[in-house]
Length: 188
Image (tube, rainbow, N blue to C red; front, side, top):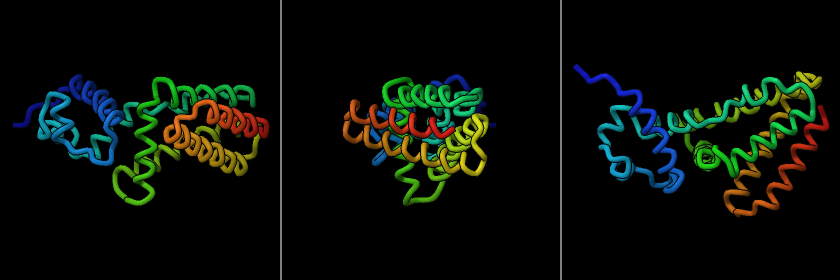
């Protein structure tokens, strides 16, 4: 009979996996070096997570911002702009910066390869788009325009994240993000 999963150990591993990937990247991630760093075996990682891809997805899921909560009470353009700034700060310099870097890698992989990682990337893009569109609709924008504007903001957000993580130019990308958020928030 199989041993039951130690859920506390699993949660601890997920956080440490994000740290490891944040330092080493996804491009050549294999389970043996990861397991060694975590003080476990690749066999145990498979036991807990089934596959390398599921491990990555579950680690990122444990770190993904709760977009519905973040934008769920937005009712006006000023609130929308403030929340976008808060999300930007969290994803560039705050608690979500490491997982945001990993998410950008996953989105890049998803653009050329299908599978669990691509499914996760699509779900992440959709989660932000839907949360923004709902907030924009509550601010008075019609639903068709809201989904298009939310798509624009989300795409701009991801593009600026890639720019920031690639160039390290925080001043320029912060200014560009502020312009993006202000411009779209004024439309609602």
